Image (cartoon, rainbow, N blue to C red):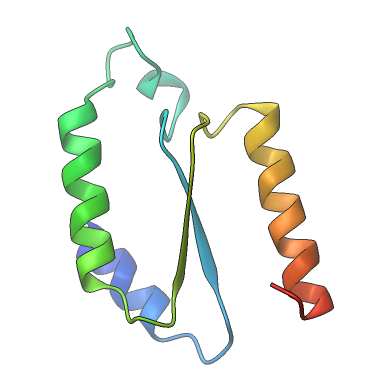
Length: 86
């Protein structure tokens, strides 16, 4: 799955960044929930980073994808990119 995602991201002709939520990708991927699997998440991330072109930005944040802080970080990065400063 990581290689498939990387292949799609690598096709972009525009600057892109991918925001990685280190504390989980879905509601069921929270610590203590049914899909929480830090080892699999780490393996996915390593495979993704290995497969991405060097000009694809990877931003790791210590939030869950559903955290307010994650949304704010994503918005801040998007605004920065739109302004041409990030």
